[in-house]
Image (cartoon, rainbow, N blue to C red):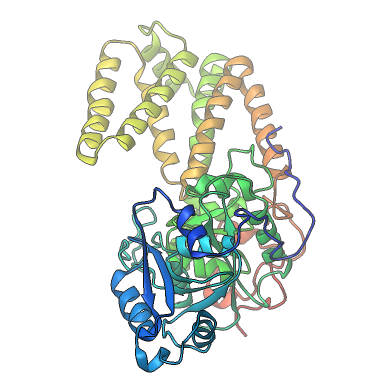
Length: 503
């Protein structure tokens, strides 16, 4: 079933013991053999302080900054003033442990797994027999912070997440300057070894949420976590449901606001999107810009989105049901207009609507996949020329085009593209139900949809919160934005103790 709940391991440790991947001791030769055939692997044997004690240094070109390797690692390593007393590798190790190399981040590792991870994450390694010292000298050549492209910002922040995890966590910390903002890291993907950071506000988030998130991240069984779908399908309770169960955002200000509500967030290396949980369905009809507008204007727009949700989901099915089974529900003048527009159309109403819905999806997909200028041209040609020609050729009726176009425009008002995609799937199903049983089919389809939504859980919380009621649930806040002076309390369903937003 779509709402089948996933079963997760019940252990609650943050960092279970990792399974060994490279069962070999740390030596310079073993390290070089692992990277045999990797032409971006660089290594040098340098004399520590000119004393003759050779040190094996290695790194991945393009992952580290070559200038930082030379300035922060190799230069102090070859400085006689620092390593003149290093007469043996053991003495070099002792001087390194005491801070002989002034790289900003130094760590000693004792397993080949940790060494390989460090080299892949942008460290320069000084390898000895049985141990190694790694210095973070990650390259700064990455995409700069830019404006959001999907979640447009009018009055909010003008920066968006990038593919570098540390840049993203810094963007969040630039908005939450408190040691209560906690961060715990883990690794996802057997081969990609992608670093994932779990962030939450201590005292605000339920303490069980970070443990659940880390446990689920560590239980994801995949070769690589390089696409968002790995988290979408690997972390949620009901992965078969088409409705999103994680909040996605490319905006650090929205991510910080979600943490302030008591949610737990996830940022993954290489993915320019932040994830937050638990996710409730009404949250997907809210935007960050709602908080930047007057509460009356924001409430009106939020109500309009709920109306649009009903239109995009039910309007085509309602038209098929009324035109096929229940024409008495229409006013006489409107009924005569519908009959007149369909007299020369050779197809039934259901075939018209399904054909137009499929055509609408094809046009939308073509507009997304083609380059921007070509995509806009295809959309214009499809909407104006082909649509008008189909009406003039009596292939479809004008009112069917209006119904499908209105449903499509209403669907574009959904702030979440994932919710919009799920609604389009159920829109097709409701049209089929209306074709088979009219209004009774629509009612059964809506009942099934509501049952499905109410049966989903997000990290142990009902997906339809707060519409399902419960202690302290703010049902009205799903439809309107309360004024600032009345919005005093956080949602107790996800809160960890500090329930007041302000005094």
